[in-house]
Amino acid sequence: MRRAAQIKCLPKSRDKIGKFGHGFNAVYNVTNVPSLISQQTLIMLDPHCKHLEKYGNGGIRLDFTPLQQTMIRGCKHQFEPYSGIFNCNVSKLVEKPFNGTLFRLPLRTTEQAEESLLSNIVYEHHAMVELLDMLVEGGNQLLLNTQN
Image 1: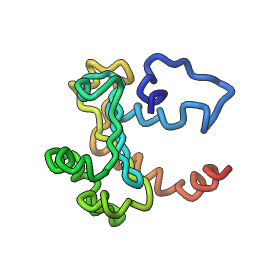
Image 2 (image 1 turned 30 degrees about the vertical axis):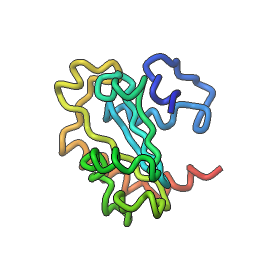
Image 3 (image 1 turned 90 degrees about the vertical axis):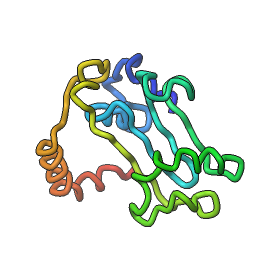
C-alpha cells in the first residue's frame, strides 16, 4: 500500500514489470483514489492526501473485525459500491470474508484533473465504454499474461 500511495514520488524502472514494477499504479491514469476489498480488508489509496488525510498518509487500511463494527456501521455508505458485486456482502465481512478481490476506480472529475499531480486526463462516459469494450475483446489474452 505504501508504494502505491507514494506513486508521485517514485521513478518508473524500465527493467521491472509486475510484482516489483508499477503495474497496479496504472490505475492512476483514471482515478486519484483507487480502493480494493479483499477477504476482510478494505484499502483506500489517496496519494494526494486530500480525501483521507485525517486517517493517515497516503490512504487507509481497514480490517473488518468485531472491534471495528461501530466504525463500519458509521461509514457503511463507503462500502456500498462493493455490495452485491460477485456476491460480496460487506455487511457480513466480519463473519464471512469475501473470497476474492474487488477494485473500485472512481473516475477523475474535471475539477480533480485540474489539481491532480498524477494525471490531468478525464475519462468521459463514452471513453470508458470504449476502454471496457477493448478490455472485453482482449481479456482472454490479458489473463494469459497474468500467469507467472
